[in-house]
Length: 379
Image (cartoon, rainbow, N blue to C red; front, side):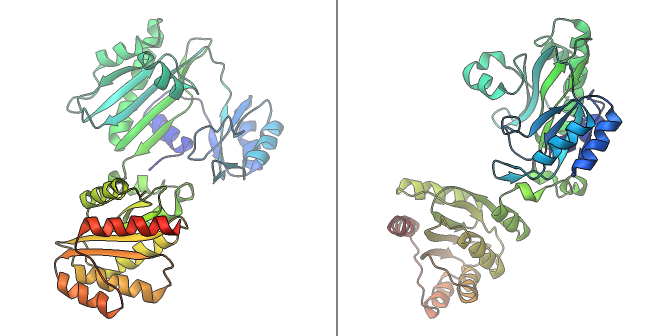
């Protein structure tokens, strides 16, 4: 789950990270009121889950409250990468002497949080990572002990020569690490971390992504989710208790179990097709999950064929068959369905489908080949 910048700022400020004051607004008049309170030039920043806000016109400098209000009238309601701006963050404009990057990510290879810092921070940090990766210094943190002070100082020495700034940056890194761990984050970054002409070190921007597995035990974090910035089909799937990720292909996949889902998508590509989604109905035998899965997949106009690949263990194949029959009776499915069922109650499932005028296969390769071919013919 991605947090908006104003939400990430709130978490960092509560941990003591040095940041300029600011507030969030949803109307131009609210923006003007915040600018009047700050009583200095401000920056009005669109709050959407998309990069490149500045280049899209979603970040504007305002010299006075009237100009801040004028910028807000243009930014609020604008579309950035398909997302409508509903809120803006208003923060004081900062005099910047230098920009750096500080980030933390959960690294699967080392199975540890990894710090990444670079003196070449700012809006082009992605280009720095791609073209001059040697400018980014990395440090894996042992989660048993956390970030030691000497490690934070070592990282900060890659950013600054002034030791007062080194100490300030090291403190911010330790605070960032505490926020990262306390909130089950998979990503936390400050870009840019700046120095001002008077020597202060400040975090001007913040980005935090929270691992979805953290949300069940942290309703306070779950309440921060902005579903308007997410793929609608993924929101519907989450509500229905399905694991779903939309992809760009044309073969819709309904599978039980993450491992089988990955194998199914690999096989679709092996036979020349492109999966339209990752959809795992899990181990439940509730036919309603199958109905919801078909509703979500058929809502995607890019899907030209649907592949069911069910290996019945805990999941009963007859329940899946009943779900398929129920769904096709509730609403019209205008794309062909290929069904592969094997395992628990397989014979019963075949009879259910036969009674509804459908047939199932037991061979996985054959089912995938058929689905790929049907999708190609309909494309």
